[in-house]
Length: 114
Image (cartoon, rainbow, N blue to C red; front, side, top):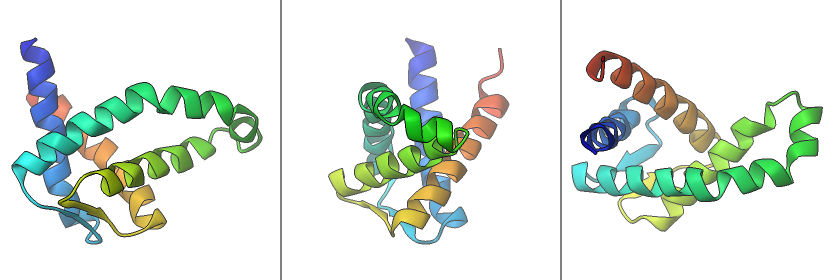
């Protein structure tokens, strides 16, 4: 339970760092970042597997690169669902989702060592 809380806070911190990397992404504050982290987690748990399964032929044809498109669209969906979290457009969502993954991975590696 404590590990889940720590991962949630690390993901929120990664979201707060995101506007410094991708300026067209804006986030209102830490509370909004916590909410976006929960929503992104739910979207990635519930919608992403279904979309990956439905787009499997395209993903195979592009050698897996279509997964980046799916991630960007889901990131943009979170931006439309939550007030205080704006994503500029598709390319902002693409670079934002990649940067968010990298920042979250780096923070998790640094802060959540076992």
